[in-house]
Image (cartoon, rainbow, N blue to C red):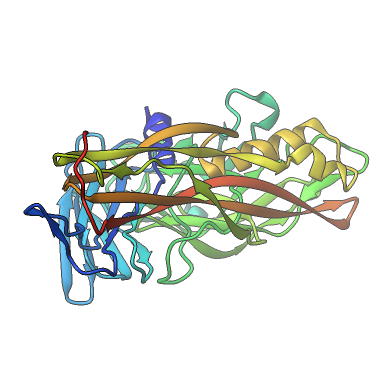
Length: 432
């Protein structure tokens, strides 16, 4: 269910943007019929979903949206979705989601200045509100190993990544029995990486994401999180270079100070001080270039009509999804890497980051109008869809030497529309 919900949010990452503009000529009447072009006030909206770390929806979470002295609020539905509409100002909106027993999730959505309305989508992830239980590992000697694999590539054995965390067997305060440790993979996590109070952005691909519970468990000295290097090619020996650790705090991924290193076997390891949801990503930031395609949309012509035409909406066709411009096999081959596990690991990581498998499809949307079009009026609609060309740079150590490869994808993005209303100087009647 969680994949379907998150996929749904990913698929509706479409901006339905529209406004009406009047023509420059003065208002006309002909045969007593008013032919003043209609106008609609520019407004914005933010839609989204609230989930827990397993991707399950959280119903009835309170979402408060603030900008300066303006406040908007709503509650999430049973499927975790919410909608905030009627936002009249551009600016950097702060969204705060709260629910009983959960830590508040905070995110920021920036709406640019402009004459077109913006419709944006976002995901908010909430964790349990708990008090830390501190454990001193030096007081216990017996250890157990928690072993699992990431859900990344769960249908692709070549892309599964083993994860191990050695922890002490313990009985700590507030626990009536030895702690039951749960390690579980998380797939398609869409919580944003936050580096500042600017709009949330994805820094890089997600190599893996794991959740360790109970989340209230903290350690006085670090435990070592071990992540297997699944690239089996032995000659040359290959590993990812420059990885960073992020943990989930207040619904956003925050970079930790600990360094991810490589051990003598080429596997990765990093110290952790508390149980949380963690992700490991390459340090290099993705770069994005924006291009646009013109959409073909039929307007409404009532210049020669004889009666008002009521228009509820205007249909249009757009693209959604993403596709490779430079696929992992091609990019890795350019630096001499042909190992299937390396190719599949990168492929699954890209798909996990973008919340779907590659593929561009056509979809139909409807531009709301909800206006009566007077005789003598013509509505002309222009639209464009943006496309992101995203370059994911990856660095590998190939027998100790640094090699760099770029994975490039083309992702369908937002749509914007303008509806211009024009009238004509004379009206001689006609038929609808």
